[in-house]
Length: 176
Image 1 (tube, rainbow, N blue to C red):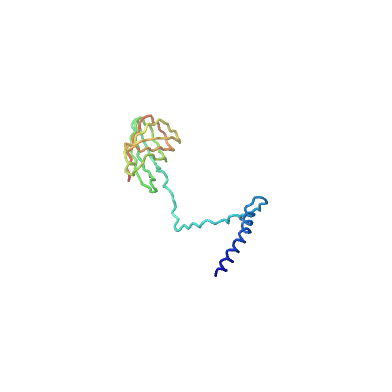
Image 2 (cartoon, rainbow, N blue to C red):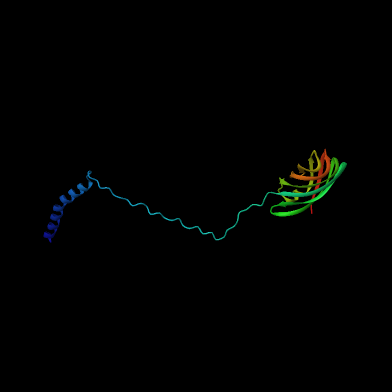
């Protein structure tokens, strides 16, 4: 048994100098060999699956369309009807008004934007406007008016008839 141990130990001692020489050669700096690293393989992103498409749209801003007739001889009276588009729905309304400094008979067709309307109930109310204008035949004008809830209506209108407006106007708008 001793012979085997001695033989095994002698063989490992004899091989040790050869292995250390090979290790030294591998670690030596000199003629270096370039190692090519392959380019990374592109990985396709995972597909996104949309099960349900929900359109994201907001309703258009509130606006009105209005048709109004007026008659005046110092003190003017007006009446009419219109529709309010608010939050994707249409609401009918009526208009009655009084003006100071009106003279003549005229018809107005108008449309415009509504600002500061948070709730439908704020639309109805008394609107006050100051306007100066004259109509002979056909004419265009712009009118801004505000109510007690802070709702502002800015109208661009076409008028027909014969009329002169020099003073303040008040309109009562009621939802039908």
